Length: 501
Image (cartoon, rainbow, N blue to C red; front, side):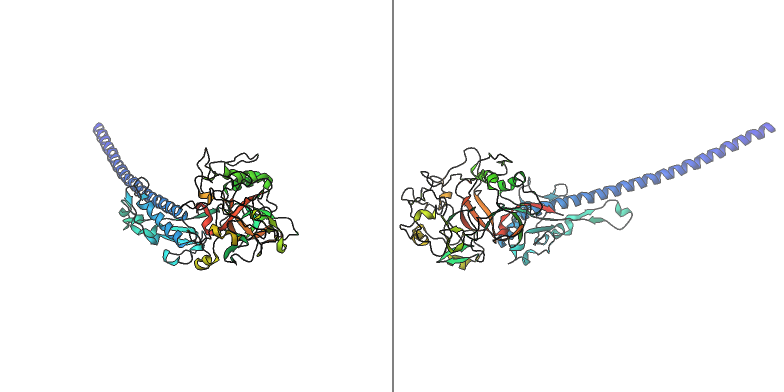
C-alpha cells in the first residue's frame, strides 16, 4: 500500500512539474513572440527614419548645389538674376551624368521659381524673383528652399509607422544660402584725382574721379596736394584692422587680385601707407608670367598670366607701335602740379603750357576715351558693349599740346581697326604676345583698384569707387604704370562663392 501510494505521488509530482514547465514554455514563447514583434517594429521604425533621413540629405544636396550654381551668376544686374535662375534650372535638366536628382538618383526635380529668393546679406531679407526688379545691385546672395518645388519631392512613404498610428508618410525638406566671400579687387589703394566728381563732362569726354580713359598713370605718383608726397595704400585684404600686413600674408592677395571682403564701396577699409611696392611688385608681375618673387612667389595655378603678355614699353622698337609721336621715356602721362595737385598733364581742365605730344604718354592701349553724352544716355551702369567711344581722329582735340604737334597715329602698323581687335591689347598679331608655356586668362592685366578719398587720416580710408587700370608694362620697385579703363561696379566683381549657415 505504501509503495503504491509513493508511486502515485511521484506521478503526480512529475505531472505537476511537466505542467509547470509547459506553462513556463508557453510564457517564454509568448514573450519571445512579443520581443520579436517589438524588435521588428524597432527595425521597421529605424528603416522608416533612415529613409526620411536619406531624403533629407538628398534635399540638402539639391539645395546646396543649386544655391552655389546660382550665386556664381549674381553680378548686381537684372541679367544676373535671370542668369542665376537659368543656371539653377540647368542643374536640374542637364544631361543625366551631371543632373541633380533625388530618390537615390532615380527621379528628377521640376524647377519652380518659388524655390529661389535673393537677399542683400546671408540673412536676407529675401525677395522673390518678381520683387527683384530695380534692386539687383544689392542682391548678392541666393536662398534655395526645396519646399518651393512642391511637397511631393520631400515626402517619404512609411512602411511600419502606420502600425502604430495613422501616419502613412513623412515629409522633409532643406534650404541653403550661398553668396560671394571675396572681391576681384587688388589691395592697392590710390587717391581719387577729383574725389567729388565720379562722372564729369570734360569738353564732351567722360572723366571719372579725375581719370581719363585711355590715358596711362604712374599709380604711385598721385596725391591730393603738390605740397605732400605721393600717396599709395595697402588695403588690408582680410578687412581686419589688426590683421598682419607682412609680405607673406599679403602677397597671395596681390597675386590673385582679390580681397576677403564682400563690400567696400562707400565704406571704410583698413589701410597702411605706403603700399610696399619694393616687396610686392614681383607679385603684380605674375600677370606677365613672372613668378620669381623672393618671398611668397605667386603660383600659376591661382595667378595665371594674361592671355596677352606683351609690354607696351616706350623707347622699345615696336613697344608702342601704333603711335608716331613716341613718348620718349615717359611710360605714362607726365607729372604735373597744376592747380595744386599731384597728378598729370592730362588731368587739369586746360593742358599746362609747354606740354608736348610725347608728354601724354602711350594712349589707348586697352581702352578708348568715351563720350559724356553716351554716359548721360545710358546711365552709370555701363552696358556690356560700353559707352560710345571717340575715334583716333579725335586725338588732336582730346589731347591738346600747346607745343605742337598733338599725339598722332603711326601709319604702319597703325591702330587696330578689324572687328574684335579695336585696341592694341585685343590684337592677335603686331601688339600681341602669348605666354610660351601657360594658358593665359584675358583681362588679368586689369587691376581693379579702390579709389580713396584723400587725404587719409588714421588707419582707415573711404572707398569712393573702384577703377579699372590696365598694366601697360611690368611693375618696378618704384612705379606701377597703368592705363585707366573706367569704373567697375562693385557688384560685378564678386568672386569665390560659399555656403552660409
